[in-house]
Length: 303
Image (cartoon, rainbow, N blue to C red; front, side, top):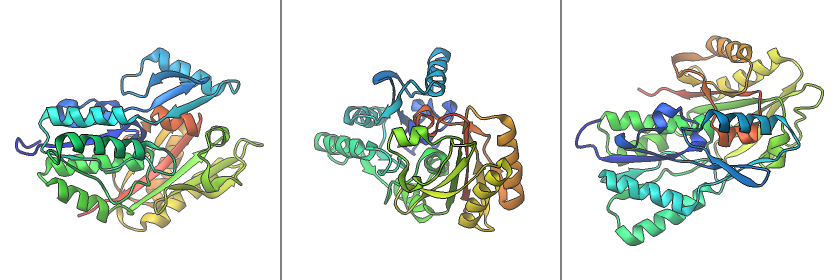
């Protein structure tokens, strides 16, 4: 990063970024974790440094349906602390490129309260800049954060970075394949996909993310894996068209063949010019998607 480019970036664990990116406070990226709640008790924070024991406890809790697994958004204090750490790092400006949809979480409210408190204490130094909307989740959210990091490396100003993110906000397609909607229903995140029957008689449900209002939409359902891949990839292809795209496949406790198969189909249907390695979903997302899930997310590559 350029020496004079003191722009701090704040994100949350809902973005699903890999640990090697989330652990970069020294480079001006501050990641705010959600809480993982098991059987009504806070089990651990969704940090990039979750232990093997915590991970196994989480997987076991999801697989045993006698347990309840939920999440809690970061508090006002959590975001305030990230803002303070960014200021102490030396930030002249702070940007929040993306955050989980306000229709899926109250994190936006916590962030807003933290910003109000921070600005009451510090004025506009450093200045905090937000995008026009918060309607994404998982690596759709994460891709905007990665874009901000790349643009910062190129020496763009905070305003320039946010202008580009706003301009390209809808240049993205998201589809997720579920083997069960039990967790979505339990936690009230199912949105407009209520009529899907994933989990019944081996039905796979496929949902998309409506970037206009940040809710989950029904795309289709099928008992056949091949059709599930096709429905998901075609949905994303319809969103991004023939444009060159950057591809990522988030997953959680998913058989490798499904990741390989949907990736192969994506390369035949999309103009993939860049691909991130398949990435395990963060725990806050997996608490709602359940095990055996995977997504295909593609964003248009500008320039």
